[in-house]
Image 1 (cartoon, rainbow, N blue to C red):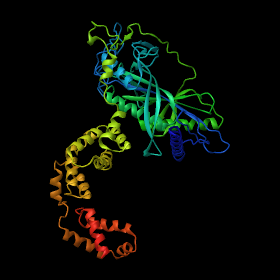
Image 2: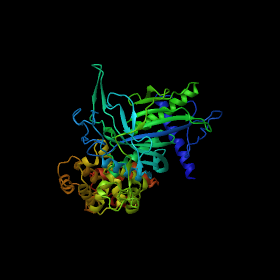
Image 3: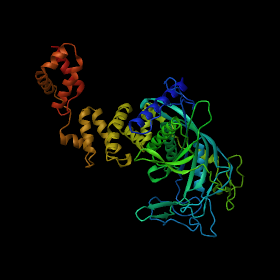
Image 4: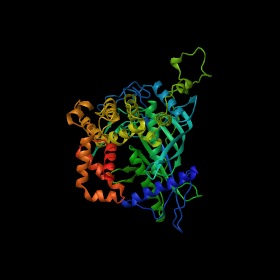
Length: 546
């Protein structure tokens, strides 16, 4: 049943993407496509027309969170002045030698363990030769033959029909994780017809995470990358900020008929946004199907995604396979790791990397955190996803819970419906929120003690957002938002509303109880949110039954 649900989910995901593409003027394939949980085709429901199976694999480069580069002592810093963080080794001056950064090794081991990989106790470094202006040595040091981690898996969840209450969990296999150097950056100046080279990034440590082609649409690829991003940030092995180039994705896409070998694949390079990744993959699937439907062929090529046009464009042909002339890196010995059993007795622990020592110190991963949030606070599973997807929001939520008498199920509504909407409206992160967890808890305590109504609380939250340093109680007193405690006064207001709404009163007496909500709203407006809706409803019902 789970596989069937996943199949239906993926089919709906793909159909939705297909419709979006057609509406936006993108190529819409003549035959609908979908895939099931195991990557097989799902009949599109169009008689006489064959279905297609999309296949998506990912290669993800994550910049390791480290103070210095992979093989040199140069500092790692985003947006530093051009060529200000370049050592002799980074510039590939003769006679310079690489010195492996221990922190980078530990980060790769930590990431491999979190992704259920087998850690190779012996891994090797290789030279990958190619010429480019921002690669001074003419080769990249990588791990092509024996990488540091292999054979892992990543579980991720995605919504069905954009409904958070309907989620399916899928798994993608991790082929390998390898350590390698980043290249420099070429800055193209079209106005002067020249290219400038910045080597600040040259030699920065990367982890390349290679995912097997187990996905079938852009939404799956985006969900898998988002989960990986959360894991890396939780571990601290990478900040994984895509806007700063710390997480870059290459997507390999192909399509084929059921039962046939995989089709020719294209590689969409250097995607730096999860939203763009989903769009790029879905577009490329549509493009390939349309090309094949019209009798064309798919070229084995590298493409780029143009976010403004919403399409992929060709970069270079890969038919003539480039010979990278891989060879062992002669200046680096094999990388030897140990576990508790293989660690020599007299070995200095500061000079080795102990796999078991790292394993014991792994923090709770996002999946575990979600389960704990659901178990501890009784919130819905879909709410736990939202809390973790926004950086710092889960901690904010728990801090509010510690300081308020309100039940967690009510608190989550205020955070997800009100606070989060404010943050998105003003494009702010949780850490930049002017309403601290203490202030929100203070506000919710006023609401819980029935000193103010929920509509008044929203007004107070709006004032808190201005960041003027006032407490919720000060705002309540200043704006005179306290609940009306005098029941006689409230009865008079309710009677006045009834007297002015003859048609609504007749409808209610005729049996249409839904109209009562309008009267409650009018009382709330008359009191500027200072009335208790429950009490107002009781008073109105009593008066209307007389």
